[in-house]
Image 1 (cartoon, one colour):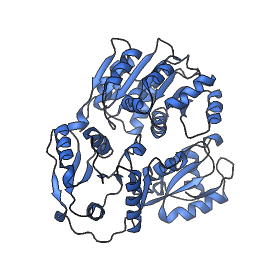
Image 2 (cartoon, helix red, strand yellow; image 1 turned 30 degrees about the horizontal axis):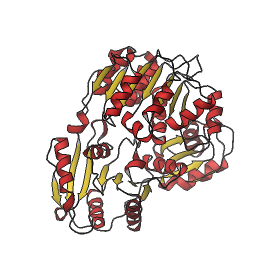
Image 3 (cartoon, helix red, strand yellow; image 1 turned 135 degrees about the vertical axis):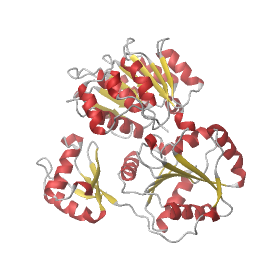
Image 4 (spheres, one colour; image 1 turned 60 degrees about the vertical axis):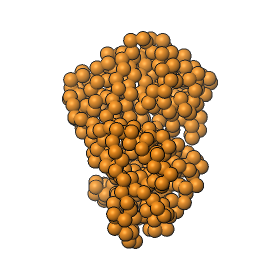
Length: 461
């Protein structure tokens, strides 16, 4: 469990940042923030070993924001991440933390969008760049991206960075930044490649902080169910018994993902699948729907789910157990975030009992196994989401902000604030979650009206 510790005021952040942290409900530091921020804010090179959900993004983002010169439109910080999804999530978190500091521009640069859009955005200026190594390298080679003013280089999820890229590529990108910079590296694990990476990019006196709390002190209830017959029957029984508000269901292959999602839909349970067969635009919309609660169940492979940072997943279900205990910990880290109680349910067959033992040894706890007949038998139950997603054919290129859409929905369409969920603004489109019984009304009113003086197409996503 992430323990509550010191107040953010103790580390010397600016008043604007402190006011925003209070507004966001970030009242006390998590361990990685408490132990790391003093080093980060004193410009020391920093190595943080911490898992997903530990608060590491806020730790490095606050360090960047505290030293930013908003009058300089050149990139002053570069954050390298392993996936497009994580790039977007880190960007959104930095924007949230910067909302009380005016005119800060954060730009996402990753594959899946046209390169010319990145070039155009860079010409307009950006203070912070968050991106993947492949697209960053391309823009450096063409001269569209200049990193000569960078003060901070962050390598986030560095172990995954080395899985999708190479040590040479990361070092090549770093060579475009000034030698006198602050370098921060965050990683859940520390394979040999990480040691080579840190020694080649950092000063010898780099500070190092290790937070191991999520491995062994978790608020997530973990149950393991032995499967004697069909896994599908067990899965339906678990969902019918626990009825989670949302669940992330992990499968080891794309084929199994497709079959499990189809099974849920055939039983009147709202489900989408996510794996590498999907184009980036489809993956983005699927993640938006799951995050904004208009999709209740997401069936995914590990590769597709990297960077998925939904704050309050009701349950993680391992339809297939992973062979690696560390991967198991990474999966269940999506539930029980920041001290909230989570639920992890795992299915296993006889030949996977050795994996169960490995997981128990890694967690230093006994895995609690249960027989499925300890649960009530599955009865047909409709598990639908409470919201649906609408799209609006305007985005950042039209200077649309979440407040513009919220205003149109509440003032013009007459919706109450609690009838509107999360709003996502992309480059050319925007998405908003609306309670189910108000969706058609919202679409009709927005289609007839204007947002920021312009008419846009509106429909169900």
